[in-house]
Length: 597
Image 1: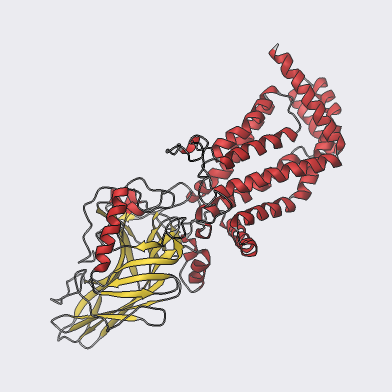
Image 2: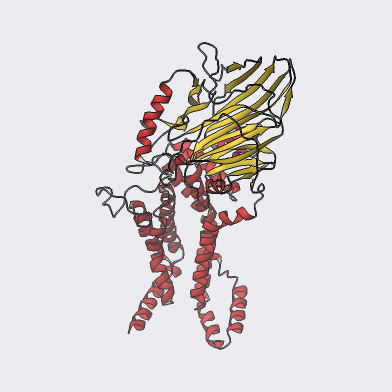
């Protein structure tokens, strides 16, 4: 019974460490204060939120999932972009256009990532114009101060801005939009773009009127949750920001709906929305700012960035600069922006508590990929490296097993002598371990050493856009997604997709078989209950791991095969273990037979 309890406890603790730690540490890891309900000034003239029903259930990656929405998006997007009055955007990282109506940044696609696994699927879309099913855009403007704007007309979402003839936004050619109201105030937005995913908007207003007025520059991001990726316990999707230097993974979309307005009382370093692979965020200049998240109905949400009120006297000019990140969460790119002064921008990727270990694994994988040109092969090479590093530990494990076998007669004698005094029995056994220099836990060490590597690879495959749509061989077209071929639908021949807990694919079957063969090489447990646990474990893990990323299963299968080869080699170096394992198996079979009779 003690052995059974130990096995169950070990399995539970391992599961807790693997899947529960990252969620639990959120309660202890330093973060900004939770957003509170508050009233703040609202940017005026923003495009109204369409009164639309909620979208279909979000997927791991996000994007429209409802066929009607997908068809409507294609039609509405074509219509919106066909209307004139747009400034083309052409940069190495982003392409698209800026609308002169409202000065909205509402049409952006990535040049480095495709919309789907198919290389001909076109670029992944980041921003879509207001009113489309995939609505997602940024707006820059001004609102009146607390005492009003003194009768000064301010530009809004319907304002038609003026741009130089032939203007085109590129890293070498910024574009300035201008608009002058009837009372002599000139407003301007200068857009500049870099070679990645950052757009810099410099807002200025020049007062050529006769009286001063008060304005507050603002910036906002507006988006629908129809395109949101699924928000899980270990990877956040939804509102995000850094406040007073601490990243806040929250609130969720549902929290914003409940509160109406979720305001952040701390100084805002950056604020916006995140999906697993994409980020849209506003980064203010050094001036004091406030920000909030708003639910606008119909599944539409907004992140506002609001500067302090400023009096603009006659003949004076007010300038504020806000940066807009809109693109893929590429680790190198985010880290470069962080090094350039954006606080904790690299943590927009939700690495979690183990990022100190996950990022080196990620860097090693990228280096291996650069060397071999295939991420699947890179994962296999990573497994070889991990097993190679731990091979000395495995040798010590087998030496410990040999020593444990050698003292078995002495242990049995102690157990027989003190069978009625369990406490004294344990003391004598521990004294025997010390006398013989044996560590009974040495056999568990390789397993526990692999857990951080396994978990790090698990997070990397989920989070890193560099893994997205990376093929391996044959039917594995995306290592970051589950195995697409399932036994229950005859590997795609039948027109249905099994539920995730029954989606047993080829990789999951290989995992179960290799784990079964690995367990067969281990010394057979004498206790019948332990035998049953070890007999069921491979097939339980087959079901548990089937919905995981294909790359993770490739890692585990490779690790199992290497373990089998390693065990055979070490058995050849310790023949007494192999002979004892065969004897244990025979004894266990006889004991099981006696138990049945």
